Amino acid sequence: MNFQTLLFSTQNKIATVTINRPDKLNALNATSKSELKQLFEHIKTSNDVDVVILTGAGEKAFVAGTDISELTSLDGNSGKEFSANGQEIFDAIQHLGKPVIAAINGYALGGGCELALACHIRIASENAKFGQPEVNLAILPGYGGTQRLPRIVGVGKAMEMILTGNPIDANEALRIGLVTKVVPLSELMKTANELAQTIASKGQLAIRMSLKAINMTMETPLSEGLKLEASLFGVCCDSSDMKEGTKAFLEKRKANFLGK
Ligand code: COA
Image 1 (tube, helix red, strand yellow):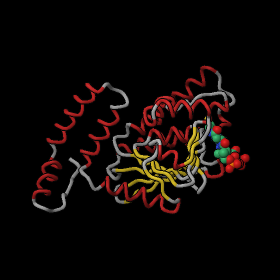
Image 2: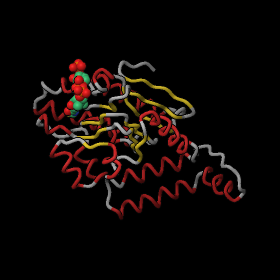
Image 3: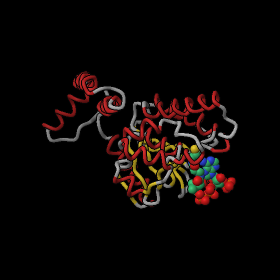
Image 4: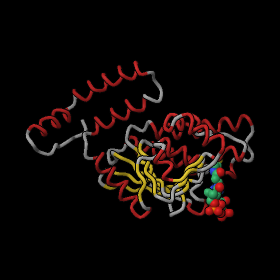
């Protein structure tokens, strides 16, 4: 597949998606958003992909936000639509049904931070910087940031980040649980690939059911979440992968998972 603003490659069931506008610090414009939508629709149904790594081109930015030049003409109605459209694309990433690892290689600001928040695992390079600087433009985070950031880092820290617009560095992001690993930039993609390989080596039905159950914590009370967990546990117990995984353990051999 060929795109103007994205690079896409697949190896050993691991897809790498790179947002490729390095001269604009990978800011998301209309083309990149529509290409992201199209590519993730393809990945969702592709038998060649079990895990996705999402990153930015160059050594300076993951994504430095939505493209500010496309904001200036928005009014009340078009602004609402603009926000809902971005939310829909990022929601499709969160509900892809396959794990997406954000490999954050520099600035993750505004829509860039929100894009990382829609991914399932976030790891960062030491030079990464995170922030929701929308208030500097007299807007608020409109691609899910007001909802996902507090759910991931807690209301207090999200309030501070969103109300001040002040960025935080990679170590602070690690401390507050916004990312789970910080590594030198030169090791970022290797680390992301190792994580992806670990996940890809497991029974993929169990991975998909785990994603579904964990995603629901964002949306349901505990009592409903526990019911869902029990029924998804049942789905896994019905699978041939589960029989193979438990049998392989008892026979002291590596499991051969088929994803069903
Ligand atoms: N939208 C559009 N263009 C952007 C952009 C964005 N969000 N972020 C960076 N760019 C462009 C710059 O305009 C510049 O383009 P130019 O070379 O054609 O002038 C290019 O990317 C490089 O950015 P520059 O500002 O020169 O780099 P820097 O190292 O001095 O500063 C940042 C880096 C990230 C601090 C700065 O670019 C910035 O504050 N960007 C906006 C971040 C933001 O507010 N995001 C949320 C938007 S809702």
